[in-house]
Length: 258
Image (tube, rainbow, N blue to C red; front, side):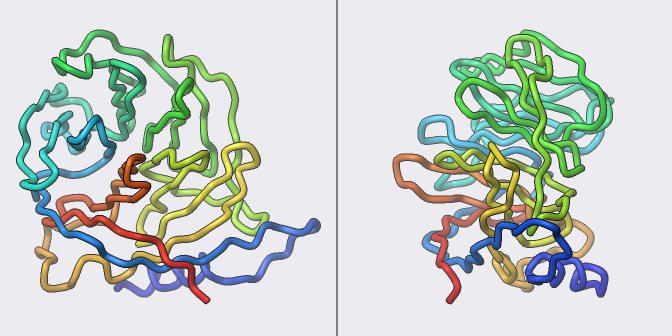
């Protein structure tokens, strides 16, 4: 691991804070792998969620971005729709029968029919798009900063923002998002750490340490990228996680560290 990444991860788990008020001290979690599944290594994972018993994944990179439906057990892509080559795809989320996909620096979001994967509408927004999830009524978007934007799915208009803080200090680089039982889980870019965020206050209430999840022997030089991709299965009350171009997807259980 590069030295700057070591410093970044160490800072996340440090208890130091120069806050005037009493900050929220996050609970630290380890993990236990319950199952391992294959994952297509051509998928630069940007968004991940369950739709029924299949996974839906949005992928990135110019000329390679797509929306795809994936069979969990086999990792096989059973349905896909390519984004325009000039679009760098990012996070995705579903509300009712609509799937929304955002883009990195194109300032565009797209609405797809969840069954046919036909693109039906596009929207514009300011700034970058990174991660996307929903609380049942609104879309929630990250943009690489410490801000979460709450958006109207009808027209992508911004309704409000919440600043995310870790021990009272702004926490940026929030990437892929997942709504989990009233909390937002976020990949912190360039780390193997997930943040559990209170969507009302923006306070990080927990940190999930996923270091070592993908064994070094499974890394492909020049291809395997960072951890990114969180899918929550509400029926099982369990998380599934993967990374950009990772060969595996993991079903995990969180274990609170003593």
